[in-house]
Length: 269
Ligand code: BTN
Image 1 (tube, rainbow, N blue to C red):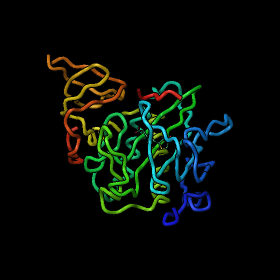
Image 2: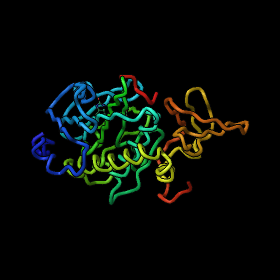
Image 3: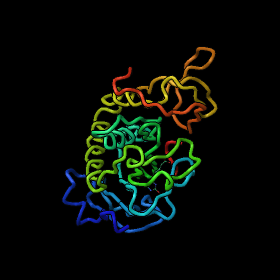
């Protein structure tokens, strides 16, 4: 781990630009950062970060693997207004992650609801766990793992920012940017829902035009609807909106569109 700058409070706190990341909790290793924000006294914006998880959690009961110091592993505590559907936070967070990792690189893709892809490789994922009005939004970004250090046999081939682009960014800057962008997107969502970000989500929607299966529904994926559900066109021509579930996609989501293309329980399952 010595070749990485540790994401300690001394290093990260001076870089924070908003209210997310306050308080900022860091441990060198833990089971899962999702479990570090249980104190009911934590305010919205509290963040837990670690260098290594021994039992990292992914969506749909999967695990999330890392190599110490080579990922961004963080959890953020949110207390969203009851009026807003919590599942939409998957898209809000996914968009914030996409924006963060694509800065000055390729356009990132979003595989609904919240996998983030660069050049067809999944480089980041979002896990929402909620109970009692509190949502813990966990984000894992693969930063510097080499090709052979990434998990194999994943539904979408895994990549890291370094393995995909040839350049692994500084994790401290990446974290500060992520928290800033996330706060901006979250505040916009709190105020106006998904509407202000639908075009940007759609521009990154890697499923559009692909044949998918989700929650027993089969069809060709179309747009992301205003309420965050994914529109599918069935083979009989009828349309259906799906709100949750694991996407199965027989063809690779490997090719990213141009950016200007047309337009506790895991809460996203
Ligand atoms: C997924 O794509 O399946 C979601 C992965 C989420 C992983 C992050 S890493 C930080 C936080 N702690 C966890 O145990 N999981 C999330």
